[in-house]
Image 1 (cartoon, one colour):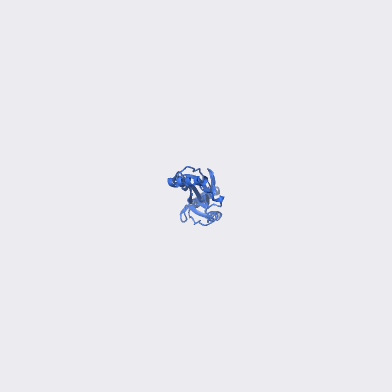
Image 2 (tube, rainbow, N blue to C red):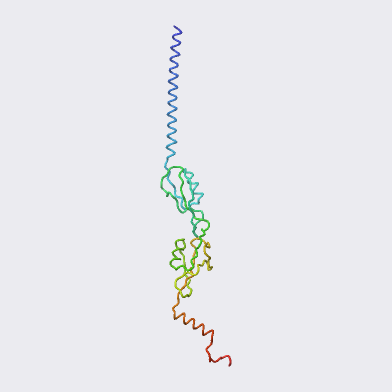
Length: 212
């Protein structure tokens, strides 16, 4: 009788242990699922992008790091009055929302001007030379005319009063001067040539005043 009662107690205790283990396993699975969902939803969390304009690149990156983002410099532009290293543009723009870990692309002011090679423009027309230089970012173009038989041809390109050789590099957007030809009227040319001849060859029979 006692043996039978002992077996019953053991059997009942085993069931309770199994039930407790099942309950603990279920609770553990629930906790793991909740933890996974928390991590997953946080990973896809939307972050509002702050305004970076005017900040130094390092400051902008620290601000983004605090929000789970980071900065990448994609371009630099030289401007004489700009603060070197300051952010002037960002993509995406401030106020947009992105997921954590996203890179924010920034453009900053360069510390030194970009150097651009000026092509050889001798014998180009003024229109062609001006169009080519403008497409390269040179917007301040002056003209210096010299007399010639031909009209509107480029003779040289000057930078700060010095004639450039072909493909010589100058700071981007620098003021340039095109030395171009200006055709003189035939009468003016004839008069100039005649005047030169008169100055070189005194008329025959003319009295030399120095004799007196």
